Image (cartoon, rainbow, N blue to C red):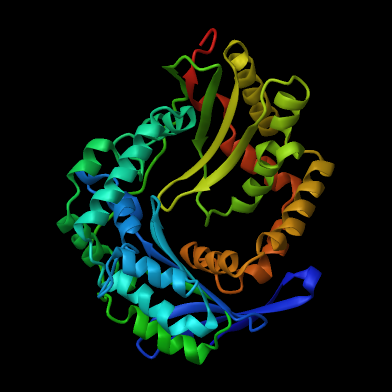
Length: 428
């Protein structure tokens, strides 16, 4: 059983150990023990997510996730939620494009009950009529609100354009028409077909030993099907044609989303691209986009970029909002910064500052048991290795100017930017 010592909280001078725990029944989890407080957090992911939704049932994964804690086993929705409240247990689920995730946090004294409620949610969800219709109504209300949100409208249209014909073109939230069609049988089929042990990733942090966790893993997940129903999400090739799509809306501002193909998490250029994006648009007030668009010219309150490594595609995405009359100017400046980074790369000072920040700020993100548990799951989903945290700082520190220039030349083609803007931008 491999064990790695990782210093993540230098202010507390606290070393944490990541341990691989395999239950007697073969369920694996990564564990960080912390007995300083009587708290346990567990993060769970099932590979698949909304990308596996049938086109005519778009939103099925999210609706299922929203209902898993709305009654299970002998407890109806009200009794289940009351049990959680009485024992101060946090338990909920959500779904994205690539995964359905579960979250559990409990006091050590209520550990066995908390894990058993989690088991019931996965293996005996009730899907009673009242919560189904209540959650359906909530989702449909949210979808109606999205139609009035410029950011949501831009995002939906942008993904449709980038991934035409692929499941990634559909929002994980679904559509009003598809949510209307989802029935109890669809929810039960999703649980039966998708929530299986061969798709399960578990991370646990807190006041629990490997031996205690091993037994709980079997009790919690042992009754799940060994394998899910075969379903394949094809690799996706994002569009590279560039161009601008304007969605006419009488907004005081034009809200834009821009982006292009990027790279996936296991790509050899990931760390150079990660550092490059921090300098370009991921570093807040330290980024070039903020400096040129906001600070020098006051064109936008916020302008940014980020890398999005999906399971079957990679993206570099950004956003900006500014007054309609100056939106075109903002886009011209963004393209100019893409071009400048592509042709010249960063300065030595920019590179050094980026690496210092990215390594120095990372431990501060791990400020709770939940955050660490979520990171353990992400490490496994991305196949980074149990010793990743021990290597991460050196991987970023090793990024050179030539590495960043190579990544920039590969990713930052301003003419390939696909832009969706919601508003009435002048001249576009």
